[in-house]
Length: 448
Ligand SMILES: *Cc1c(COP(=O)(O)O)cnc(C)c1O
Image (cartoon, rainbow, N blue to C red; front, top):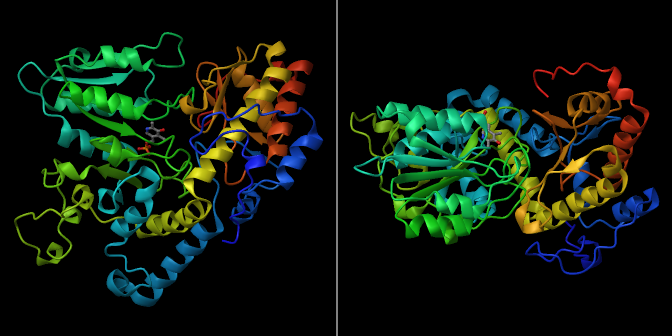
């Protein structure tokens, strides 16, 4: 990509570390939004995506938009299958055997991991099961798993199931730290709950509803000081926020690739295991976790791979790997630091417009304002959020709704424009000012 013209004047006012460097000086006019688009250092990336025609796509934190490269790679994998059949495993342009590890190596910098600490495999919830099954070792006096009360439901179901599998009662052994304000969780409250009876901590990097970004480094340090292992679900930060999992000494992590990493609906997920734990026995063993040189010996004894690949279970979906590989090229070309800078600038602009145009109409921002405390989306609350979301969709803006009253808007660094943010906020204001949402049904859609 030729697009490497750093333009500090258009970084939204944040330094590369994501801290405010000066007054941002946004302006509320459409002309200003267009001017920002004209000079945006990442403006070339939008062309690498197919976006719904005539609509404003603000839901990339639920399902990222399709990059052309992802589609192209899937077509190539299909042709390889037609051309090569079984030989695709060894002879495809990207041999399918070992591709999951290869994409993991390329994805590792996004996690701040060493190349063999990441592999693309399974699903988000499946990887959570695999890693918690491996890392949760209840023992005398240390039997509990600590999480937060706002965690994604699937994560919570899986944690409860893992506790129940050990013959323990989840009501007693899962500690869910409460939120004071219903939107955020204080790191200090999580630390207070890291008591001597806790065996394992599992937390999201970014809370899926409010968009709060937790201080993973601090939480990891405290957990380790207290003899507790800790893992993170990076579903809402992977591809959007830089991480330093290896340096922070995080024990394990897992994430979804279909959100900010644009690998397609239901794509394979990823997992990270810190190399300190290499050699630990994967709890849910399967042949795909074998040492690659031994896998086809078909031995009755399992020889796990040396790296994170050992935590794979079965054959990966090659079409999904193809999409993940193509999509990853786009993210890597842009660079995670530039993505983070632009994402912070866009979310901060969205909050600026919200403050000016929407707060008189009962909207509130539930996302923390500090750049180091938020991920890639902005959560607005409104008592009529369900109807407002439907009215927005009818006007061609795609948001998402999270019960009971949250509208999430994700301006995605790789493809959302300043003008689209401006237009989304104007639509919101026109909806509430005219009351057009009041005619709409207040029952949420099944997938919203
Ligand atoms: C998106 C997301 C998931 C999705 O789980 P799947 O197994 O991919 O369905 C899980 N946890 C969190 C925190 C998420 O944001």
